Length: 224
Image (cartoon, rainbow, N blue to C red; front, side, top):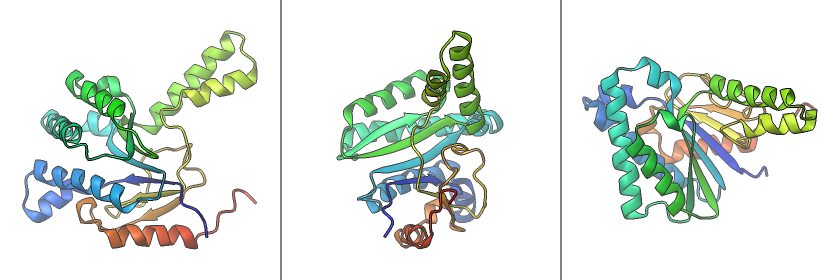
């Protein structure tokens, strides 16, 4: 049986769920944040679990009011996580263009990273975009080469320039769309891809189990 070491999730469908249920946008996203905690619990035994919470495209294309509402919700949930210690046994790590976030939010995120620890890690991508990540890494590699670094060191500079280190075994996307939308374009090259029609707040434990069963039934070839 294949061992599942790393799962990454694109949690799509919060807005559509709110519309479907007649909820406010904030209520829809609140359901989505609760689902993150659920999946961390369901995935007990998987060392790495990754969520894409907010993309660079979200920041650029959604209204200022919606983005500010998201920031306020994130701030509240990070504050709650700090007070309730609801990530016990799990190290939290954020990645992305974190400098674009409000200072108060980024400070609390840093505090959560410092105060959580455990054998498992929950990675959360905020203000993340795969294209920007590759550009950043390529720039660091080019700078290393321009400074006379040998090719091996330049490649290390590229790797260190990536926001996300590691390669997910399984990527799950909810909300019916069958694309990655710029999520971990390099790291996902050998990931198994599972697409669920469920909107993210509707995604249940049985749906997660179906995704992991799909992974177990898939055969990794790695170019062979």
